[in-house]
Amino acid sequence: MLRCAAHQLQCGAAAPTLSLNFAPRSTNNNVGYKSFQTIKNFQYLYCLKQLIAAPHYVQAQKTSMRKYFFVIIILFFNFNIVTGQIEAEIKVPKFDDNYSKTVQILENGKTDIDYKSFRESFIESKQFKIASEKSTEFKELKKEMYRQMSESKYDSVITTTKKMLSIDYTSMTAHKILRQTYKIVGDTINGGKYKTIQFGLLKSIVNNGDGKSCENGWPVIQISEEYFVLNMLGVELETQSIDGGSCDRMEVVDENGERKVYYFEISNVLKGKQSLKEK
Image 1 (cartoon, rainbow, N blue to C red):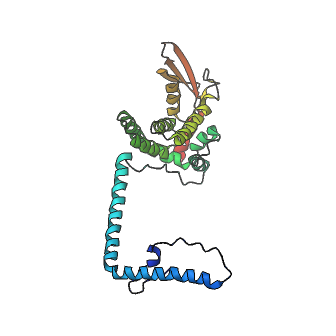
Image 2: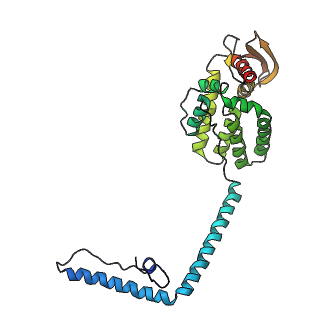
Image 3: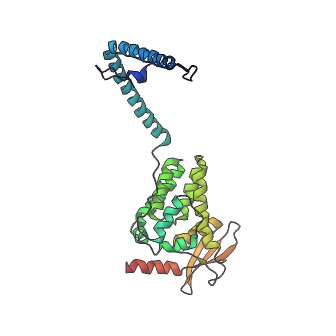
């Protein structure tokens, strides 16, 4: 690259380009050299003209750069106004345990896992105690999520559900609302991802038993999972009681007014409560 030394101006880069064919047409080496020298002379001539106009050129470049800078800033803020805010990310726990490792695997998009083992790993993790300590915060986030949904603040819903999942990644409610919101805004990739996770968690409960007796009760790790399953069934809870010390007996009414009883196996719920006392 040629430089105009007096002003350290990179003229070669700015100079007009000559389209010449350098394919050898003659064995005379002087022909090729003359062609190259012609280009060199052209660039020096252009450089000389730039030196004459250098002060104005440099000032124009500075002004232009300032304009570009402000345009970029304006576009950035306009983008944030349209989208609402920069999308938050789910905070994956940094602990060296199965729960934390599996959350990272799921966030990376690998959703073909053993969801029952994953749920059970939560109550054995350090994050489980943190989630217990943040239970009030989680409830407030859930209330905020429903308020944002009623106001169609989709970007805020996505942020809030991700905060919920940062506390408890096994929350089927958070996964459900997150994937539905992604579908609304047209993000089919993330919508599909969190739908797979939501139903993976759900099936790991309802596919292990039929819920018709204590012996075949649906296995849960938290009481919130019981309410989520009942909500998905479209029934209304009337009474709840403990049956045999290891099952929750839920008397419900469906949309047709028919009374039914469902059972949930709660040994892991009790195990989780015990682990919190020991930690």
